[in-house]
Length: 274
Image (cartoon, rainbow, N blue to C red; front, side, top):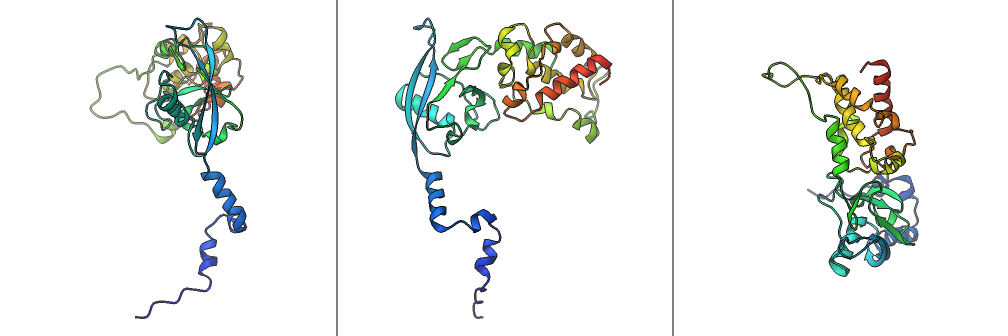
C-alpha cells in the first residue's frame, strides 16, 4: 500500500495547536526567545550570615554563581555551598515545595527557595537572602522553629472525638469537606507567621499559622473540640491580635487564603456558630 501523501494543510493543522502568539512570532524573535530561556548568566547572592561560634552580630556576604534561567534559588544556594563556601547553612529537604523546609526571606519577601525561579527575582541586581523574621536565628539561614511549633501544638491540631472507636471511617459529605479544604494545604513552613508585623513585635501572639491549624479542625464536622479551640484563640494574644494586613496570605506558598480563615474564626467566636 502506498504511503499517504502529507496533507497540504498539515503544517497549518500543527500550527493550530500552538498559542496564537507563537504562531505569529517571526523566526528570529523565536530564536531570541529560546536563547534567553536557555542562556546561563551570573547571579550575585547577598546572604545574611551568622555563626554563633564566631560572630557577635549577623553580617552580609556576597557570592556570585552561574545559573540557568530555569534554576531555582535553592540551586544557586547549593552552588554556593558545594562550590564556594561549605560553611553556608540552610534547611532543605524535598526541593519540590512540599516539605516547607527552605522558607526564607528573598528580596524582602518570605518564599520557598525551591519554588523561586532565579529569573523571577530581579537577578540583574543583587538578590538578598536572609532568615525569616520573628524567630531566633540559630545559624545563617536557619531559625529556631520551636516557638512556631509550640503555638501550633497549643491549638490542638488533631481530631478530637468521644465514644467508642468506630468500626469504619468517619464519613463526610463533599460539602462538609469543602468547608475546611483550603486550610488542609498547610505545610508548616512558617512563611505566613513570620511575615506578620504583629508577630515580629509580640512574641506571645499565636501567629497566622496556628489559627489556620485550628481552623482546619474547628470547621471539621467530625471533630468535637471546636469550642475548646475557640476559647484558646479568644485569648488576648489569640485571633484578635490580627490586624488584617494580608501579609500572611501573600506569603503562603500553597495559596491558602490565610486572612479569610482568620476572619472566619473571628466570626465563629462572635456568633458561636461553626
